[in-house]
Image (cartoon, rainbow, N blue to C red; front, side, top):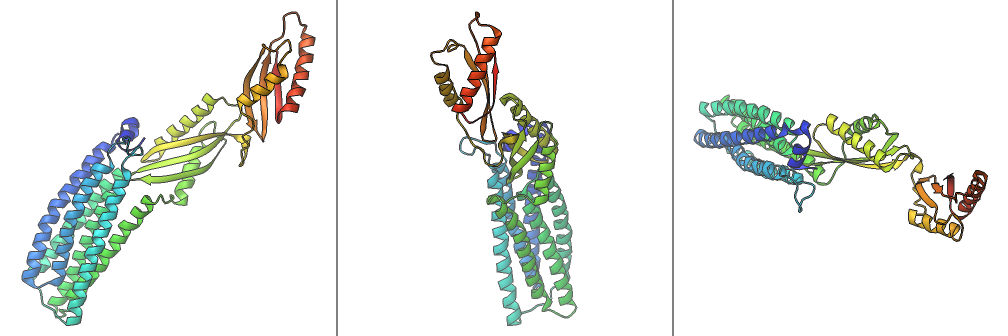
Amino acid sequence: MSGKRALEKEPHLAQKETSLEWGKGVTLAGLLVNLALGGLKVGVGLSAGSRALVADGVHSFSDLLTDILVLLGLKVGRAPSDPSHPYGHGRFESLGALAVGAILTVVAGGILLDALGDVFSGKTATPGTGALLVAILSLAVKEGLYQWTAKAARALKSELLLANAWHHRSDALSSLAVLAGLAGAKAGAPLLDPVAAILVALLVAHAAWGILRPALGKLTDEALPEEEIQGLLKEAAQVEGVRDVHDLRARWMGGFLLVDLHVLVDPRLTVSEGHRVGEALKKALTGKVPHLAEVIVHVEPEEHGAQFDLGPSREEVARILEGIFSGREETQGWEILCLHYMNGKVSLDIILRFPPSWTLAQARRRAEEVEEEIKKALPVGVVRVFL
């Protein structure tokens, strides 16, 4: 299961619906704040002659686009699975985060080029007090938005929402750099204003990479960190009936974790018993691992080893037994109870039905003969004949 289907199926994930609405509300509030702050910074920056504050305002306006991308990404990325996307739409969330990172990269490049031009041309200005006040206001508001958005992102396990939180944090850091540059410029070092703009560009670029790197990792099915893999293996090994766990693979699909693994069980278990062990393992993991939406369990007999020899199928074994019993008195009186494939050999349990006139000694003698014939015809490990 994935997307909203996971939320419907797993009670422990039901609260995520509330978190999703919270995430959307936080993003919408951020959009309105960015619109107001962007206009204020650019207006005051132009009137005060602060290149750094104008650059910071452009940064805030770029947040408007990312806020819209986040809203769309949350809506599409958390949509339930459908025939065209059976694993859900989580990758759209990663694509949204990638777009946010790309926008930040472009913004950082534009600010950097503009500021470098001012530094090399010697074009400087001394900003007014209004620019300082706007920078202080922006720092406080954007840091508050970061804390609020990051809290919602952690609750929802949304890389897209976390990317937007870091966009707010980068804006706060930009305002801090602008504040330092403006203070330096008013103190008699006007060159500090474009230098502060360069620092803003570098901070934005750093934030962009922090968003792009994990998004690219999720889009390319990058493995989980080793400590998280070991944690999953430890949880799985504690489930009753599991003898060993191997070949565990995990990947993120947006804000949801998908896991598949192989477990070794007692080779004498029936199919339904093995299935029960697998279902118990799924329940244990989804109950303890946050945001785990899907677990695929491959159940294997303990003794099969790394290289599993398929051996003859049930139909092939039945044809060989038919040849052994053909024309004999018990021809119509035999049945395969079960087959076990272990250590490259077949272990076979069969029932033989004899005529009621036979003595028990005759039946046992014939059963021993049958065992020998089967061992000659098949790569048999153990043959058990029930009379």
